[in-house]
Image (cartoon, rainbow, N blue to C red; front, side):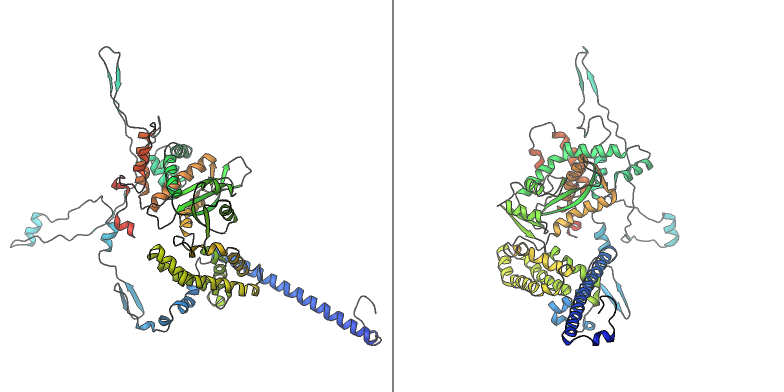
Length: 543
């Protein structure tokens, strides 16, 4: 038989029985190898398709899988309600239902509540003249209570030059000269005032308006303030004044029991490295349950473990974070620090699968089942936050621990059913690798299920970064970390950002040359000494 080409019937008929068996066995071996190869190719294709769908969903699709798994969640938690007739449910008090049409009725007093925080009120009277009234009412009239309604007017921000005249006095002997007392300057020989610097800070760090766009706004107002000048004011304000607040904030944060931690990349143009090298803005913040909340940013050139290790030096307590190994190393190297991991990160890859497949195709998948199991943990744990710590801990052991243990047993049972490189497989691997850290909340009632508090605090920086893209210098990055810390801490404590910034930049220069730093306590967001103008209206804060 030739080594190449298809054998003829004559050649095959001339083979012995043993030779035919060898040929047949060889063919089966080759077929089996080809089947295995094709199976491997199909798995690779499936993985590529899944990755493409997940990537496409992340870029273009909806950001939530809530609607997709809602039906499964109802069956998991609301069996009685799931069997009820929706038509029997009555509308709420603020809904008027008409067949084929539903219209929401505005709750009484809502407009008044929306405008209740505005104290600058102008009253305009709309009256009829005496002659008009006499023409209408021949036999006289009486005045009834006015019809009152409100409208909200907008007044664009304006600029005002304040010219200071400092009196100068001289003795009759012309030897003694005395000047009147001038207020403390934010910067000596600069046009910048606390209100102007605070306005620029508020626009950039609270509302994500880059300096170059603010520069354009000043030009429209016929004022020449360059972005370079504004950047210089931001750096000097942070270094000379607001850094004092930052240090005091950090002292309070280090004394708390739990700190949320997260980090996000940022490009700093002039940091001594090659272009496009990533720096990192680390974020640390108090737990939501704290009455005195602190949010701190820390700029660093890298994502190495030395940075959180240095920042959290001396801290004893819980660090809530994602599964980044740097945090685990931090916990191993510091006996006083315990690491707890975030369940939102544990569910993320399962959510990617569910969102990419859609409602129908995701039903019955392991990813959807994993989401339901994690959602059940949340569903059972959320009401426990209303309980005292010790009771919450007992209830977590009684009600939540079986759910958590059951979840990890279920993951181990099904891990082999999916390719390890699939999104679901990666989700299973992540959960098992982080198991001890994901279970930490069971033994400490102060630990929440997730790191959402840090995610919320770092979001403002990420939105701003999307607008201004890069930071020019290291000094600018450090200043941004300080100012973002002041802004986010104010937000976390229901303090009005702009009035608070203006107040800080007004008060701190008055004390900057002294050695007594006790005045800072009166400037903290939770201080009773803060003026009422810095505090949000109680109704607004409750929303």
